[in-house]
Image (cartoon, rainbow, N blue to C red; front, side, top):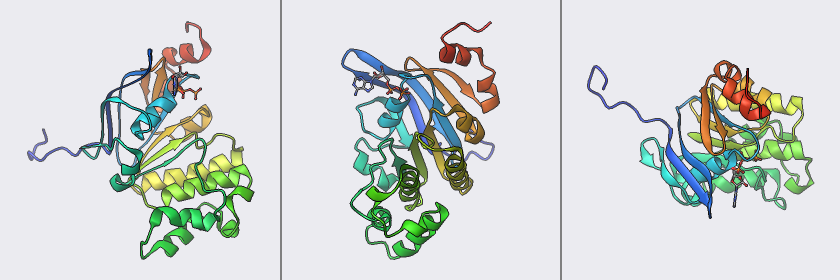
Length: 242
Ligand SMILES: Nc1ncnc2c1ncn2[C@@H]1O[C@H](COP(=O)(O)OP(=O)(O)OP(=O)(O)O)[C@@H](O)[C@H]1O
């Protein structure tokens, strides 16, 4: 309770006791974490640790137990409800319409908003893809398609941004450029949850890191705290740290 008796504000994303089972396999077991407005939280862990399953459960792409809340309200249980809660996401498969142009892809989530052309222009230039605005997405090289996918997620000005492997398949220049845009969005108040294999990128961008192994949280903290945690070394290297 605060001194003035006001209600403490809820985290932008609150995940409590999240559990996901595929048949007899419990892929995620009792995972809890928060993401606050303006914060970048990364989920890391070795292959098969459950990162993508947590991400998919938050996005309502798989059945979940436990609770997921956005600004204190229960999160939608269908992916189509995410937009109404101010949530945008990018997926590993990007999910762009390859036959549509870059510009058309960004217009899709904006429907009939009056300011849609200006919002698209802003995002195209912020992500450095204005010069390919009229090219079909399918004709673009992978790094540019990734920029378009991030632009499309950001064009709706989300309050919560969920990113699955934003650095995957990119070179250092593209990673730095996308990292700067993600950081800028967080500084503007967006809460960011990302799942990422690229540990150096995570260490450079995340405010806090949640480490998973075998579907459970084994460590959490700032990049420095996580880097020095022997349980993390053990999970990644498969050996007991000295
Ligand atoms: N649709 C599914 N059906 C059955 N098992 C699944 C399914 N999706 C994931 N799993 C299993 O759940 C566990 C966690 O997988 P998940 O993909 O979430 O891990 P991850 O940490 O994202 O791995 P990676 O880093 O390799 O992408 C693994 O044992 C995986 O085989």
